[in-house]
Image 1 (cartoon, helix red, strand yellow):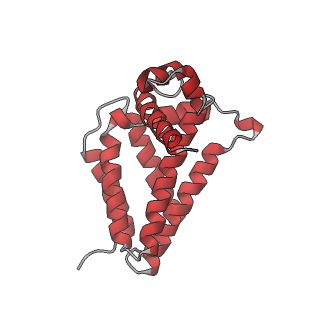
Image 2 (tube, rainbow, N blue to C red):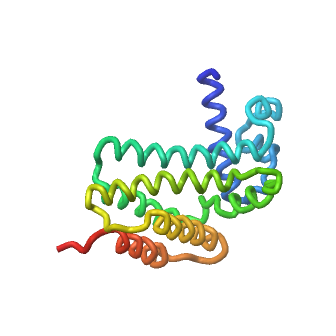
Image 3 (cartoon, helix red, strand yellow):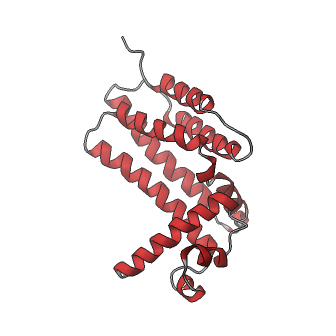
Length: 195
């Protein structure tokens, strides 16, 4: 694809992200995306067939970015505790930012998929996320920066509490204290007591 085509796809995903965060997955139409991007229907359909394809591109890119961030920092021998702190700080901000939350859209998207027909994309997302978190936690245990824990259990606590708060933040006001309590407990699970 040309550089212009790549820029157009970035514009589409950027504007569609805002719409999905605002309206959820089910309420966003290709016409809405045309309105936000200024593209004609033909221009939009040249890049994407439907809103599901756009949404899947957005969430796959988000997960890929985080996976690359983890892997790159581990390859560069960054401190596991610093990687953890960066991610937990970001998660705290994201948990209270209901205007940019895709949690409801994610729920609507994956609950509308035909899981009985073999569409296990939510499971694939979960497995991919679990793999990268497990890699970080095991790295931290190898470097002795993290306590010895069951990585899968810690990952489940992280992902389900994070997504739960993101979902609730769309339904009720969430103050900073809730995300801080959650990330504080994750830190206590992983980081040894400082002397």
